[in-house]
Length: 474
Image (cartoon, rainbow, N blue to C red; front, side, top):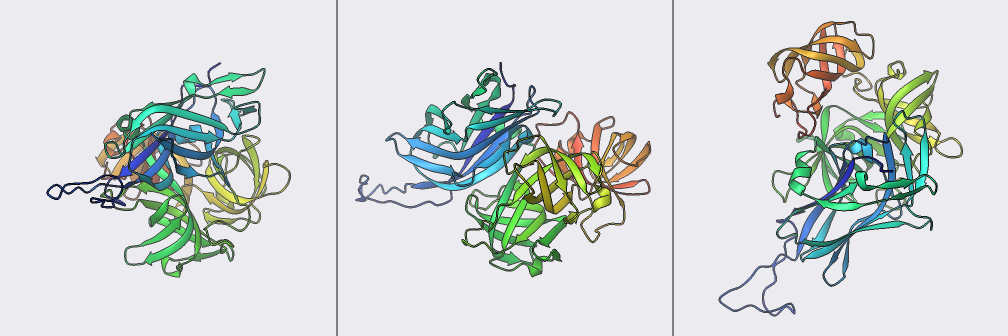
């Protein structure tokens, strides 16, 4: 049986102006005449992204990505991503129309004929209703699974992007053996990148610079290189050891941080990528100095399905571990809230957490940090009541940052009626400002004062496949 029609795409974006080296005459690789000197790019900077379309047969497909290499005509392999020591767990369905930045490397110039992708043997398939998780394998030997694309004829000097498509429509699952057979193909890069709603990244490493004037800091990440982090309007910086809230001025060079946010490519190919973060976690200093935490740290995100005291049941959508079940229990009695508070943890809320497992497996996690998506920053960046998901239809549009909605259903205590939306600081999770037309179905997250909803996130139904933007820039 086929798994679904969903796709996983991996994109390599080459920066032709980065890491250029000049080679002139007599250098062992050929010669040039005196009147016709040449300047040959010897290397190109590449950014590796993964993405996926929404699965239709399984709600979630969890895999572990270990390594990606490119092979030139001579058979020499160049590593694009090496996560062998700590595999990157990916829920493919969570990357629908999203580009996940995986690595930044310097790729030697040349023609590459093959790409190899190494996956861990385990794959978890979650049923559409989320009630059942199948533990499957890619092979019966127990070893890693290597997928290859051959005859690529990839020349970074001519094409700066490579898109690899894990075509789940051609995957097969044998229930009698528990074996999943995978297929990877090449796709048109322009089409794939055009369907990204947003690009995102997880940044882990040490702070190398802080610019309080610009409101940014720079992180050295082993996989992503040098990343400039800017703070969203409602951003929170938290010291996880002391649980103290920090300002950008409190952030010191050498601090070990963890960031997840949206990626904005530089204005030129030589510029570093910028990550806009809503939460920055300052971790204890890493023992190895490489930006990794001293102890295993489990992170995840999902939707709350039940609350019983300080025990919160979460249906996972994202995690850095391969889950044994789609549904896990997160205890929040000892958690630090970066956004929202315990009373905001209700059924339907989107949440993020970090902590440690309290027993065998990963079905129960004691959270040290808990984040309620869309809530005001801890300490209060607004006086409004948090609402994790108001659903309605656009009634009138004054501008891309000011419109009204007619609410007929909501996930929390918002009665039906007409509400004025302030979207001046909101981010579009799907769609753009051009999609804000009368009658469009929208989902908003933010804070509510009376009948005015100050939005932090906007989703527009039926307007996917458009590039991520903010109001006024769509």
